[in-house]
Length: 157
Image (tube, rainbow, N blue to C red; front, side, top):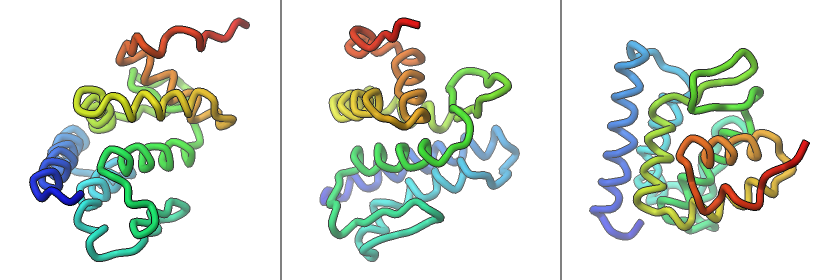
């Protein structure tokens, strides 16, 4: 992000989500809080780092040259691919993991502020062979009632 105000906006939203998540979880450090902290620091890390690797997830800032929305979508994709259970924004069922309010707010911000790249990425996930990405794309469409994506992707059983 070349615009300094965009860096602060992006970092401010992720930091706010981190505080909300902390309050709802009694400030227990978990995967979501670490992910939000990483998101908050992405605009600043790319100034000083060529790449960042956390576990199996790697961000290569130098070669990707992604904007904030693209970084966020890549980050979400990498997290979803690594999950063992399908994720949901709804109250979780037995074989699901709940994403929580911070991730819901993050996706909601993308829908309101930068909808087109999110829609393109969800379409890509719907065509994926990865069950977790397919499930996550379906969650986004259903939970946020994204009308432009609810046609043509119904699978008959």
